[in-house]
Length: 468
Image (cartoon, rainbow, N blue to C red):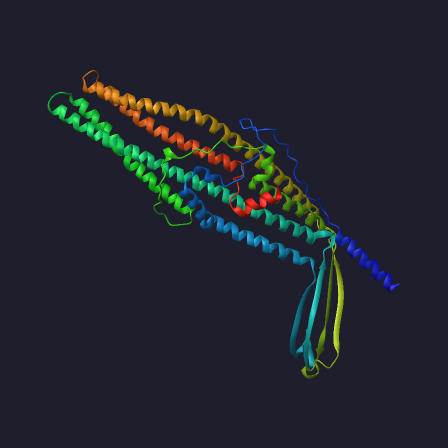
C-alpha cells in the first residue's frame, strides 16, 4: 500500500506539473488590406536586399557599415540581447532542484537559553531543495523570458533599420547643404562681377544710385547664404559622426546630390507581408507573447506550491568523530498556499489580463502605423517625381530668363528691377530644385524603412532565403 500510495503521489505531481494555467499564446489575427492604395507596381515580391546600395555611393556604404559596428545605440541593444539570452537560462533553472552544501562548527553553552555546560557541534552535509513547479508557473516564466529575448532581438533590428535610414538621410542632407553652398558661392561670384559693372556705370553717371543700392542688396543676400550653408554642413557632419559612434569631424564626400541616382521602381509587396518583415511589429508581437505568459504565472500563484527539502551528511559533538559517528539525514516537504488575502491573488491575474489586452492594442496600433508609413511614402514618391520635373523646368527657365534680362539691361531695353527679379527667381529656383531632389531621396529611404528595411547582412539574407 505504501508503494502504491507513493506511485499515486508521484503520478499526481507529474500530472500537476505538466499542466500550465493561463491561455496559450495565439498570434493576433489582423486583417490587412488587399493592396496599398498608391502601389502602382502590383507585385507580391518585397525588396530583399541591401537597399542603400541602389544609390551606388561607396562612401554611403562605408558609413553604414561603420555605423552598424560602432553606433552606441546598436551596442546597447546587443548587450541587452545578451542579457535577455542569459535570463532565459536563469529563469529556466528555477524548474529544477537546487543542491547546496552547509558546513559549520559551533561551541558554547547557549542555545536560546543557558546550558549547565558548554557543548560542541560540528556538521557537514549537502542539501537538496526543490519547489515543484505546480500549475506550470516556472514554464510560463521561461516562456516569458524566451519571448523577451525575441523582443530584444527584434528591437535591435528596429534600431539598426532606423540607424541605416538616419545615416542615409543625414548623408544626403550633407550633400544637399554642400550643393546649396556651391550655388550660393557661384551666385555670390556672379553678383560680385555684376556689382563691379554697376559701380563703374554709376561712377560715369550711366545708371542711378538706386540701381547700385539694389545690386549691393542682392550681393549681400547671396553673401549671407554662404556662411548659412557652411554652418549647415558642419552641423550635418557632427550629426553623422555621432551616428557613426565617433567624435564630430569632417566627412569626406565625392558624389554630388544632383548626380545621385534614384532607385528603380520598388516592388512594395502585399500589405500582409509587413506583419512578417517589420521588426517593430514582430517585437510588439513578442512582447504580447511575454505578457500573455504572465497570466499563467499569476494564475499559478493562486494555488498551493509544494517544496521538498532533504539533506544527507554527518554531524557530531566532537570533530574527531565527525566521519566515524554515522550519517545524519533529514527529509521533508511543505505545502504553501493562499487562503484569504482580500482578493489580492485574483486581482493579480486580472491585472495580467488587462496588461495583455493593452499590449494587443499596442500591437494593432503598430501595424496601423506601419501601413500608414508605407502609404505616405508611396504617395510622396509619386507626387515628388512630378514636382521634381516641374522644378527642373522652372530652374532652366529661370536661368534663361536671367541671361535674357541681363542682356536687355545691357542694351538699355529694360530697367534694373527686371534683372533683380530674375536674379531672385533664379537663385530660389536652384535652391528649390536641390531641395526637391533631397526630399525625393528621403522618401525612398522612408519607403524602404517602412517596408522592413531589407536585409542588413549577408547572414540574415541567407537565413531568410533558407526559411523561404
